[in-house]
Amino acid sequence: MSGTELPVIAAVDGSSHSMDALDWAAREAVVRGLPLLIVHVRQLARRTDQEAQEREAGDLLASAVHRVARIAPGLRPTTLAPLDFPSAALVSLSRDASLLVLGSRGLGGFRSLMLGSNSLATASMAKCPVVIVHGGRDDEEPAGAGEVFPDIVAGVAADESSEGVLDFAFETAAAHLGARLRIVHGWTMFSSMLSGGPVFDRDAAADAAERSLAELTAGWRAAYPQVEVMKEPVNGSATRTLVTASATASLTVVGRRRGGESLGLGLSPVAHTTLTHAMGPVAVVPC
Image 1 (spheres, helix red, strand yellow):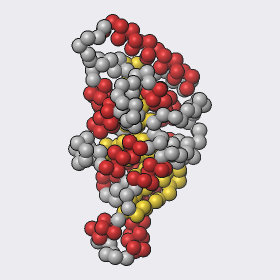
Image 2 (cartoon, helix red, strand yellow; image 1 turned 180 degrees about the vertical axis):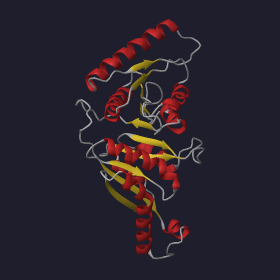
Image 3 (cartoon, one colour; image 1 turned 90 degrees about the vertical axis):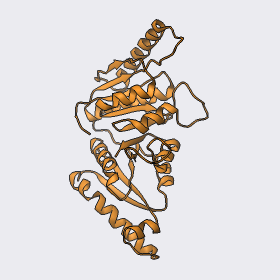
Image 4 (cartoon, helix red, strand yellow; image 1 turned 180 degrees about the horizontal axis):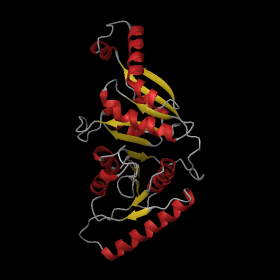
């Protein structure tokens, strides 16, 4: 990530999901040694008491600051309450952020949806990595640079499109002492054929996928020798492996191609499904 002093941004709207995201963002800001900016977007509406909205925003941000004081003592967050559409404001702010963190669902929308529209849109268009925090994992321990971090799981393709994912995943693992990085790559016989591999030899294709993954990660393993790495070539789609791993991983990392192909929002099917069905925090990294 560029700009070591660019803040971690936590988006809050008063929902329990956004409070979980705030907790996660505060801890991550401490570990990375970055400032924390708490943002509440006051939504544009024709029939809204602007003074009342400003008071509500002030109360919410004050409560968020107080919460951070419990979660990450010593961190001194700043606050911002722009008047805009939520995803538009957050995408704009992402240009000057190291990381943008928000909950999987806000106060609005349908309860049956696993991922809110603002979360999906922001993750699809932000200029910095976005972490979507799925609720249900509460940890009241203060943040600290030496705390043990469970596995980080990264889903990669065997080409240059994974550079951003690997860069973010290795950097995050290095920042959290004791974190192990699991790198998952889905391969098929067809993809092996395209890369000049064997046509019908499954074992040879699996070996080729292993070698390809080793070559892809060699530079990062050399740059981050302190990070324990486990490479996991998976025959078929990596989606199921990523979603399953997210239940126990501290963070699952997927990529998003700039100007991408799928679903009209730049997310590949693997990234979209992982983001929607994950059971823990997911980082979406522009590649």
